[in-house]
Image (cartoon, rainbow over all chains, first blue to last red; front, side, top):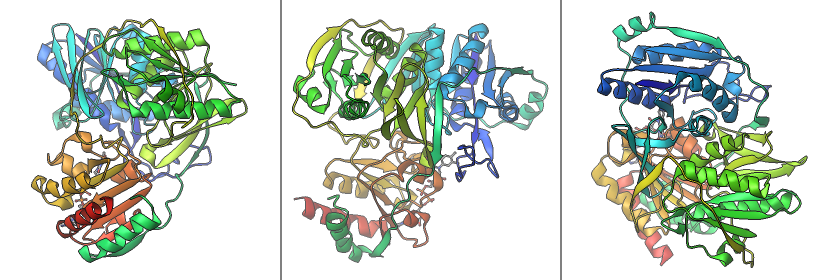
Length: 250
Length: 318
Ligand SMILES: Cc1cc2nc3c(=O)[nH]c(=O)nc-3n(C[C@H](O)[C@H](O)[C@H](O)COP(=O)(O)OP(=O)(O)OC[C@H]3O[C@@H](n4cnc5c(N)ncnc54)[C@H](O)[C@@H]3O)c2cc1C
């Protein structure tokens, strides 16, 4: 079975955001890493292949040349090969444009299963997986916390507000992965060595315009300065007073 | 003048509150554009109230004849109806199901999308959406270049219009889908989900153990409409389910009141809750970063303060 997993290079979650002159995140001093949710996607892809005892896992990223590093990590975790769809503007591309580029590559790949992280923790849009699947005419199950393959039927569970729903579809199918789905493995030293010999293809891709235009980026409005009301349980009456009469939330 | 289609979320035929907020957002946006028509679409059979939806801001309501929810089927129905009506925008609520529809509807209409919007303005002939990025550490304003702007509206940021009006009710055909919801296990009658709650009581490692959670539960029981939240440290320790995690790799919340007990205030946690209206921090360490972001803080032991606060809240809301 051919399995693809789509991954993204994102700023580390510890990043303190500074807005640059170009209305984008100022990259000075920012560390980048594999999108945390994509680790669940990679792990699931590898588990499906291992359970089937055959097949291949291809990692695909739409990114700048730097994203080679994140693809190397996915290869070290165990993917068989990787494709970097390279464009210097990729890190700032909108979700709809990203989905178009990925769908074109995936159309040719002919995968039975495509795994995504449920969102990239930079733009936080949750949209690329389902948009790719729609372009490919494939079903897609999003924010999955439990995945099962029964023959050619995919049975997944996902958490919705105040409940959990079971969603089923048949292959080929796309899945976006939520925390809780699995425990992503670490790349072993052997894996890291092996990754160096695995195929990593770089393809230049063009993007025609943007589906979404960035007007501005700013820091969120400052919170008004707060105060320490006091110490211990003795401070509770003063807190109640503030919540009732000052903040008016009780 | 832009007409807007709002895709409603229903569960077992009942409308979700988040959808009324999305309808309210659409009403305000259509009015800002010079007065467009707002049509609300239920993609599955539902028991809808013309006065409730009209009051929230819808001019018309369409109910499709599907039984269970199919994510791709619902999106296909929305895409077809958007085309039939010739709307300039499609809004959904930024719930798990709404987020699921967003990218699909945009791809179906070959246009761009904006997720989790916290404000919608109208400028130079188009909508400008404000939305958080980097888990709320920054926000961006975007315009959708395609023919239809597809956007999801974050909870607790928009209100139903609150007008006296009745929406015109109609029906439409549902498109079939390849993925199908086959079961829903609900925590019926339970607490509101942390992402939707107007008040959140959240606990961190400072609670000491899973067994101590009754302290937070008692406070949440006393506060009407309160949901429970947790830090990642607590979820990773297995004390609480991931569905309660607030932060960069959990849920983003913006309730009226967020009470953080025994939470240090790591940047990834702050990312998920710093847009709360009022933040109360309880922590024994006066230097904990959470105090720099809190509206009100009490320095001290949660074991002592939570029971006292619970009693005070009980007395206050009675
Ligand atoms: C990729 C990534 C993603 C992450 N995503 C998230 C996320 O989504 N959400 C999240 O929360 N974290 C996230 N984190 C983890 C984050 O960095 C912190 O480790 C975590 O938030 C700490 O949780 P905590 O505040 O409960 O625990 P701690 O940092 O251990 O803090 C416990 C606090 O309790 C106080 N305390 C102890 N005992 C008492 C007492 N008896 N009474 C009162 N106070 C007491 C202490 O003073 C301390 O401030 C992420 C980290 C990474 C690397």
